[in-house]
Length: 301
Image: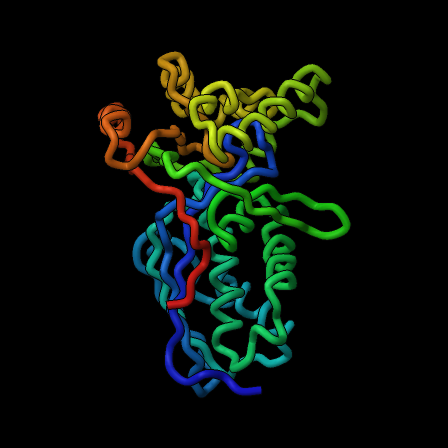
């Protein structure tokens, strides 16, 4: 078993999970990418540098999430490198509900596999996906980060993910607040049980959302109505939920992205008049982006 010479670079897309009613199951890859470059070096040293999101705040040692994910992949492959040099160019904002941790996990696993000659023969795609979901704790973000597009994921005798069609007319606008919310804190606001009527309503909207994203985007507003999690999270992100309310009142299919606080609004093309109008509604101090759906998932450059 040998390591490849020279650096390897992978890019990983941002993701939005839940998409309203599809709590912990639905995910969409977005064309906003982190770029990770690593190489094996002699001497037993670890060198980590970060530019962009997380610069100056994330750890630069073995506790860095990309490094931990790489180590997990090397363990499966059966050989740890003597030393590693890693550089992260992060465009996905942290703690905003856009899948930055899933991008780090998928990026680290794929990067490590690519650094080993014949690594795909030892660490196949299914094993890699299982490890990614295990590290993250749930598969809804790692699935679109790995596969791209629109995915339905869950756990049933192991983690699974199915990629399904996305109508080419679908794009999004993301409204990203200046401050984040940790996923653990957002999950902590959810109740242990919900009314049966809410669960039934959410199941129906989730089924409709799959159809709407596939080839009927005119139904996205109705399909993105959530009954399970967004309202419970309002105390942690009141401005985000107020924006969701405002947009939905105007007929826009708007939801909280993942655990928030980013708001995602579905649109009809990154250069459409609808998108231009949505971008004009960006709150002061927020960052807003028009993004297409990323159909590629993680890529090795």
